[in-house]
Image (cartoon, rainbow, N blue to C red; front, side, top):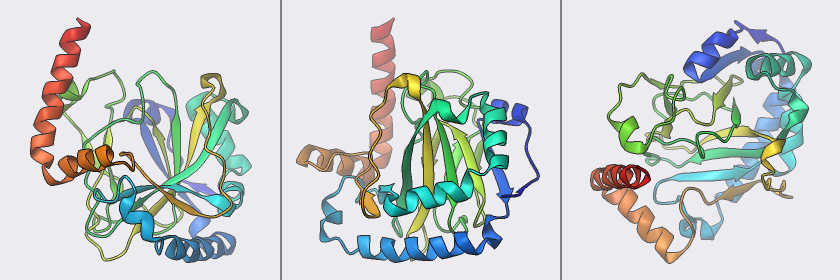
Length: 260
């Protein structure tokens, strides 16, 4: 895999992410794999239980790559990419466990609060591959560059100065992102779902339970539990977004005061 316009390590350290141009968009094996993935995704979307999944109202689901996981991995993690990944993380690839996941945003849905993926100190990296063009129209991820440089509670982040960027991607581009970079999903204004597949790189020292690769490509609940309480929480999150934001700020302030 040929990496065009390599970005230096100091950019990654300062901003918390890098976007890489690759030759994957011209690779017939990659294109064929995407075709197969899209067919499986269409079948998975026919599951009548999706409306009961946590994340449905918000319009944001998780993914298990299933039988495509190892194939996609073999196309992405070539020697050149492995060397680059190890250079910017200062970690050997074999020091990570890998979760073969992804993110699906439904049409006309997808807005989220800014958040990080887990606790600040729990090291983790996201390697995401654009299997389609991601534009302003179909729900790009929005990040706050440099927001990973210090640990912040939600209210501290909310009132901080932000360098917001919506990450537009061309088919075949790769995004490497630190887990503690503040980010959010944005609305998919298009009439088609938007898929982004990711490898979640988790250091083995964390002893995390990795989700097994499923026998089929699967759409998974996300953010909220698929329970009555989970649905209520998600309803408040989506339907009363501004009020939910205010409550989240107050809760964050109270938790910070209790710690002090």
